[in-house]
Length: 91
Image (cartoon, rainbow, N blue to C red; front, side):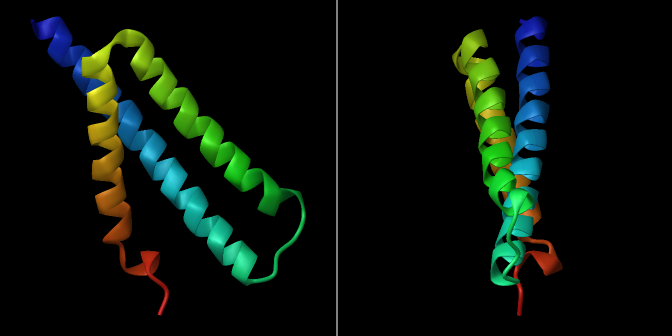
């Protein structure tokens, strides 16, 4: 039973890290697009963002339902934290 809790905690941390990276890259990409940035980085950011998120959730899904739900919970917690930062919403 303790092992399941540890696995859930590990995947919650993985989900939180993936969420933080996903949303940080999304914020950077939006600023780059509105700043008329072109090039490889503006194109690569969405691909990297998707790859990180897919990898994290695929790894969690491969371990079962509990790690998948834990990863989603961590992702949503990271989303809440990132969106509450003052610089997250441009004025």
